[in-house]
Length: 496
Image 1 (cartoon, one colour):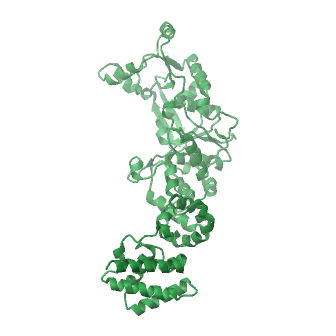
Image 2 (cartoon, helix red, strand yellow):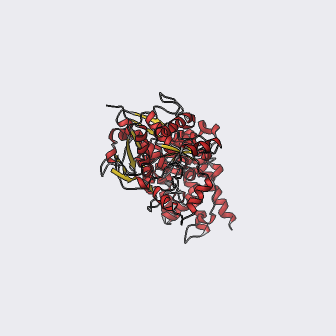
Image 3 (tube, rainbow, N blue to C red):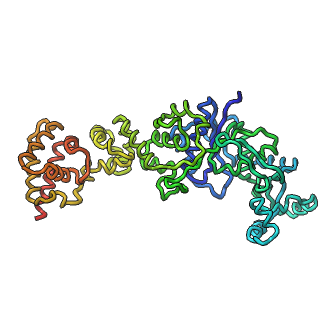
């Protein structure tokens, strides 16, 4: 059996989109499931649209989620180079070979002429344009003399594929079955541009063949281009790879997924604090499933179970709610030390912690994390949930909240005075003793427990929502709690 070889061939015209990541994942999983090779190839021939830093982002994003390649621009391989911009002469030679065999031709049409054709809807040529999807094939049958004259005048030209005028093109899709296209609706596409760079169609087919790609796994937006690719394979006389087009990813409402729905670039999910395990698990289930009940998969599980026929034909809706659920579940499964390592960059970025303080404050932060772990939806949530644990970020913003509803300033002062007295007397300062002492205090005050505890919570955290009160008091420590209760008491006194 021939060795399975799949590839991911992104264009560095932007940062890696979540749809591109899923395409890469499916190709990677299929290769690994079949003990094959996965190749990373960079399609950077569209020089006008290249984005600085995009290539680095693509590589970093793939590595982050756990996708590794056997050959690529950063590690080389037997079919190097793996950047199309470095393979320019290969494509040029292939395009001219197609002219020699009668499968392609030089097109000397100017941009102005092509624009006029599209605008002149009443012309006879429009019928040809409509059937050939954009070009009237004016240069397809130029005689040798006309071509020679144009060449002697150094008129710029492109090379176009000569689509068979009759019959139809058929290919078998591993997910969707047989797909038939009438050739009359296919355009004589440009293969080589006037600047000598290939278009996607030529470079894609040439590289897939020369790199011995056996399975082309990509999004279904490329289905309409595949008949042209099949014609190219036939023109070259090459064996074509198997094609598999995964379903498009739609927004939660069913339209195109865009920034207005939320993050769409992989780096945005990373920056928000999604775990790679959660995003991996979620992406695998966007269009693929093992059965109707299994939801959690590690990378090893996916490699073991992944098969193309289990990919769904129907579009997949991107549910941020489901992804958030996965992320929360994975966060709650983590050990404290592991969570600490992942949250640390967010605490530093949020100015809660300086790099030089990491060693001295690690033990303190490790005590904090179990209090917020159940509440975390994203790792970035840790900044908002823990800021009051750091004195320089602690502040009572709504001072009136210190006074319980249906109570007076005097009631709040009484709560704070007794809290200071009861907690100061505790030794040792343990959670069980803190809870016992404060509950006894509530009984002595003859007030509602919610009123009493809310005043204390506001006084020591500055917010109405925080982790468990007794646990929070314990982690903050007696000295810090005494200072904050005293500070809250002074605020009440100044309120008059």
